[in-house]
Length: 502
Image (cartoon, rainbow, N blue to C red; front, side, top):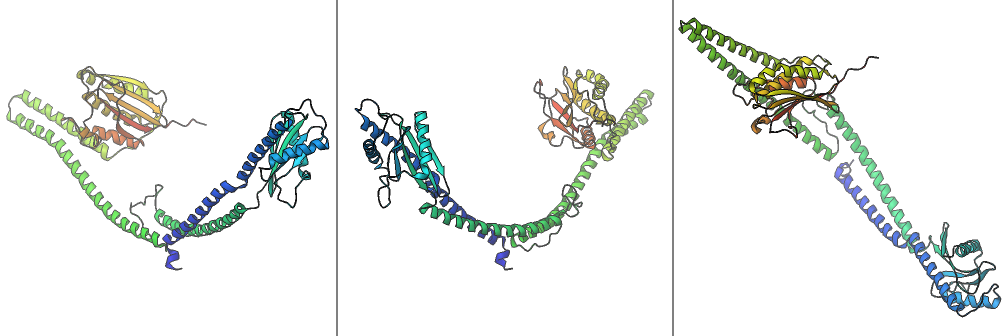
């Protein structure tokens, strides 16, 4: 196979040229077919036939002006006069024949003054007599013009009937034209255009089919290589892109080379980023632990030295009490660190959310009262989703204590839980000053806190509990009726209910 045939650009260029020629031919055919097609010709013929019929009516009205009485029978002399009326009316309408019809005697006059035969045509067209009779009968009965068309493979017959007002009873005028749809310049152009269009479309289809076949096979091969050893999300276990083999198509091979080079760079960058992230996390954790441990150790050392230096038993006991408080603080810190580093798999069971939120509010009432605030349970769904009640209670404890500590006197901390679609939303809302913008991006990271006496682990534990349930913890929008900026923390968990026993 030559390089030109193997080039995707050459395939697309040839396809584009064929499609462009096909589009041009189609546009030309549409314009020509619109202006000279059989439909337009038939419409024009209907207009001409209607005008000619009205012309006969006008000539007949002039012919009958001044007559008195009515005529019930048409003799030969009157037929010749009526024929002259029709000839005069149709002389300026090429290709249209017509006459005058009576309900009692049939044809009273016929003429085709623009007939292109060897002589004047004076006989009614036998094949169309039934159509002429029916149109005239409908026009006489309805007392209005009636038109009809009859289409065949090669021509369309257009016939119009018009009621006449005059001395002859039951008289109607009729006109007729024939539209030949398989003759003329438009028909030849149509056949030539359709032939060219068929050839270009067939060529385009063959070329496009070959191109799609080649591309389909090559792309399927690339997909197979990219999807090999990948998980359900299409990501390889090691996170690196596989090395792709050439496809044989020049443009695709350029993409393959670019992907291989990008995969190599991505793997190197990923390893560097992972190492940097590990070192950064380790440094942040070490710095946080050192900061949280150094302050209690300094206090313990100072009080221990004071106890040793003082002979007053009361001061020694007070120093020992403070040492015990600091040891308890260190113990809580270590437990929180273990909760982050050793998360426990949740044990799911039907959970009464109303009871869980009520117990949490009751537990922290005294702390809130000392702060001058209150805790209220706003609304709770009566359904019992599957949750680890202990872990959810611990997450709520952290959120409620955090809300109480930021609540001004006279404010209310509100707890709510409800179902929204297939999600469970548990919210804790306070009326405090809100979360500073500088902390929002790292609010749930370990050791990030806005209080000087906080460890910055409470919200991190909340996030880990939410993740263990397959959900997330986030800072939500405050309620529309909130009196102040406040803060709303939200647990967004999947809604899971027990399956009824069969």
